[in-house]
Length: 166
Image (cartoon, rainbow, N blue to C red; front, side, top):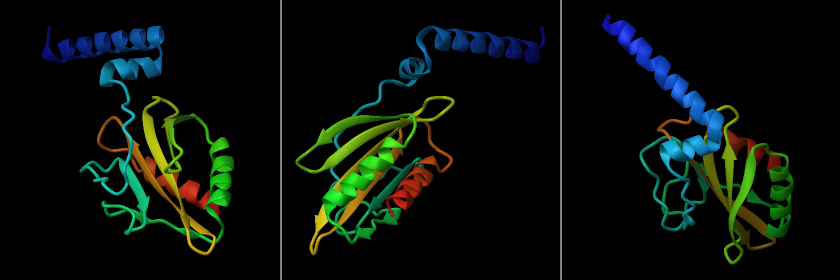
């Protein structure tokens, strides 16, 4: 048997095993078995450091975050309660998203949004901040759990969400 046939046979067997596993336990559970469970660790934006992988996107004001943001947080000319309401209405329109832990004292919320085909989980943490003169802002950190690249998904998601809040 040639090396090519051995490799091709191995790939077919591996594909059959993977397909069987996914069919038996489902895509999300198969990902958990393959890569481990998604860890929900609280985010402290004042201490957050970004990793070297490009599969993350941070929106923050320079005075609120230790890490250099990819995009500076917008300031909204309405109170934080109005910003939170707009956020809530926008999130309700999102697909494949589930709520995670909430820290009411910090006004900080976590979400998991999964990709359409492979169901890869991305975590999104948002913190709402009241400013003087009835203005507000927010801090958002979106990151992938698996792999190195996200093909710009985290950035595109957050830019679209910020646009929807306007």
